[in-house]
Length: 470
Image 1 (cartoon, rainbow, N blue to C red):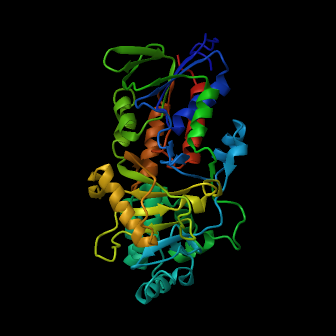
Image 2 (tube, rainbow, N blue to C red):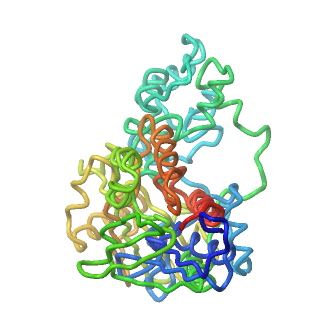
Image 3 (cartoon, rainbow, N blue to C red):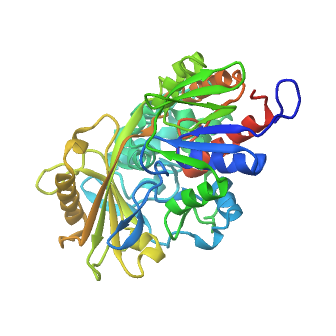
């Protein structure tokens, strides 16, 4: 990086605001690009680093109570893990399959779909009623889908083509695990971009578009990965390698452009100066911090809504027999035998899904919370555990008391990729690009998963180190 005159500046001071995976990865990448002379300060408003990557002790085991895995078919996470020396801890799921609770019964989650959108009626026959199957079979004969480059509400499109049953029983349960919401509040192009691209290329139906995206034969490559010590170890190693000054429990309240560099308002009384700033915080915090320095970015960030959720971790007594499945997704509206709605939207049978967690423990996590449905999250921790245990008993017959429990709440934890999300992100990035020494990263941009967040962190670090900042 050079100063505005082109002369080589003295040691640079970089402020990274936000200590989640995007902030930690950005701090590390800045260190690799700038060397040891730069001062990198990592500000985190909470008392711990990691953001939605959090490894806690449950029943004496290191257990992820935020994100529990990353997409292994994207290269960024695995490449970074290898680069920082954690490749020996990388593991992939067992062969246990997922199931779905829909229509009052549990069935294997079918293959042959793209996020639940089927490539053929045969792919989803085991989950749908006869009426639902007929609607799926008829979809290729409907008038061709023509987007004309537009984004559309995913749920509206799918319901118009397939009816409600496919959406409620298959699409929404899968989307709920990623966004904590269903298809009705999400946009097609940011949520399932490959499907939109297939339609743009001329696929006349959603069935044809999904079919064109499915491999001719199942790929042997694993879909997901994690670390044996928990994904929190990724954060620990990144921050260690970044050699950053870490400031926990402090909130950056304001951001001001100076003649040369930046002034940060930290807490109520402190100010800190920096040559460049990386914003790696959720959309509401980014909106507030860019309000004066990049108002068009702030306006676009204000349109990104967020969903809240909770993870209820259960350590069951040794020897407890779990179902022969990696977990179960629960469709919205499903009820227990007594008519009570399920509180959980999904369970992960972690000791079945991950071999390293099944060697000397029985660990299960229940996920709670859907966008626009806050009622379940209003229960206190004790009541939430009770409800989730009742759901687990209904689905599996397991009634034995856990030896340990932990409730972790993620208020506003997941950004919603609504209609027009990609255009909003383009507006954010254009506006930020006009401000020297400022970059933005995180889950609000190009994907909520770990690899996507790492990609935004790499891009932010590249921007900071390749453009004048002071």
